[in-house]
Image 1: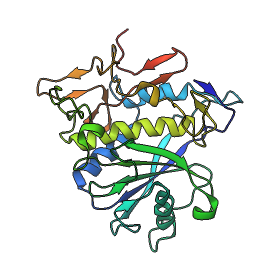
Image 2: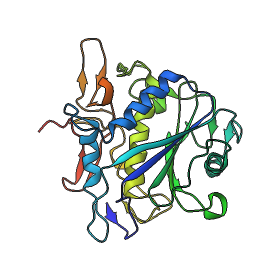
Image 3: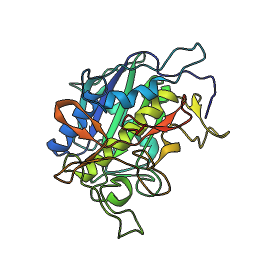
Length: 284
């Protein structure tokens, strides 16, 4: 893992959430509570902010740390599938463009502190979704959106590939005997989506323009802070084992506490201080 001298997200972040397609309100509530958890004080340990603390250990060339302040600033509902329901990756920018030019209730184009999250509903197909990715992040082109701002996309895998993107709450492909864990909020696909969202948020903060922190020499295929810890959720994780996580008496598995009494299970990320994958539920 090395730094490539580009800008990082060191200023407080305004998150702009775009719900693309038709969404179940209960799934939206789970995701909102996770985003609310990012900067919520006084949560019991281990917590979502404790997970975020590892992200803040990364610094830019001026030795300024990644921000710990993320706020859900506004939401937009693209219930009409403005770009259709089968999307090339490049179409994500058009989804953002539609959201910031809508009338009424458009999202602002926040060029100073904005980051845009595009979440697609279960019936939306995205290029490479379920074949290679559960989410990705990049940045917009001024020619399409009007400015360069970071964004992340995450898909809902419920009817397409829960075994890939809702792991470990669904059996992975080729391993039907895998002991599925109980999802913390009773919705395997959405709980899996939360982990993918955390993965992309951490990478977007540390490598927003593909010139920040990543491993390897190819910016077209960087190994970022989440990629290095794929599938690890607790101490001892790796080689197909998720690691030690909490398991409640009702069968729920989790590794962090969130806002409004929620529990989540989110993937660990690379810790630049420890030089290893780490999360707040680590066993010392």
